[in-house]
Image (cartoon, rainbow, N blue to C red; front, side, top):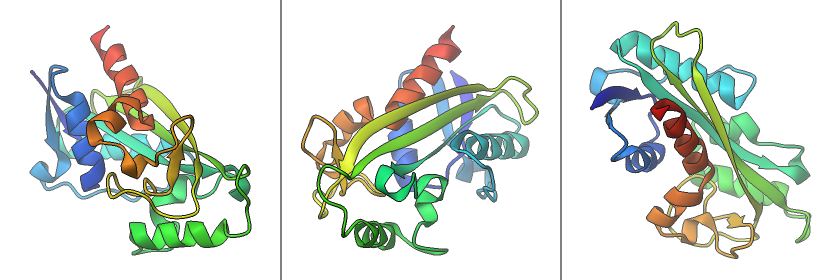
Amino acid sequence: MRRVVLASGNAGKLREMQALLAGCGFEVLPQSAFGIESPHEDGASFVDNALIKARHAARLSGLPAIADDSGLDVDALGGRPGIHSARFAGAGCNDEDNNRKLLRELAAVPAGRRRARYHCAMVFVRGADDPAPVVREGLWEGEIGFERRGGGGFGYDPLFVVAGDGRTAGEMPADEKNRVSHRAQALNALVEALKG
């Protein structure tokens, strides 16, 4: 088993990623096991922010690290909230605050013009100064609904209506979501690259 640090302080992401990495030959240790706090994310893209997190965790743990950065891109909002998805409603906000703000900003946008996608960048670094990190990305297409549905998942999941499905990500069973989500796509591609 290869030991790797999962560079995330988000409990929902941690659960999803541990489930996705189970059985792939990795012993996944959360960064909290090393007393590592999340760094300030000031990158210009999802990839930049994932690399900031992975390099930080690798530097402080002395182990390889996996990190992701993900968020929601909404066409009618010019791609927002994007890399600011977790802080869309401001510093110290929670998922409920972010969902309320998203619904407010889309209040006048009709059905058919609420296209959105979850975007995930997943990175693996062998060490803090790895000159060739492995980077993979995933997209999950959908649209923003008019009301919250479902109690599963986290973040914008109760509002994100999965393309071609009709359910929100919050209505999907966790194991199903973990097979098809943006994070699953990026992580599965990353694991395939690491096997090679």
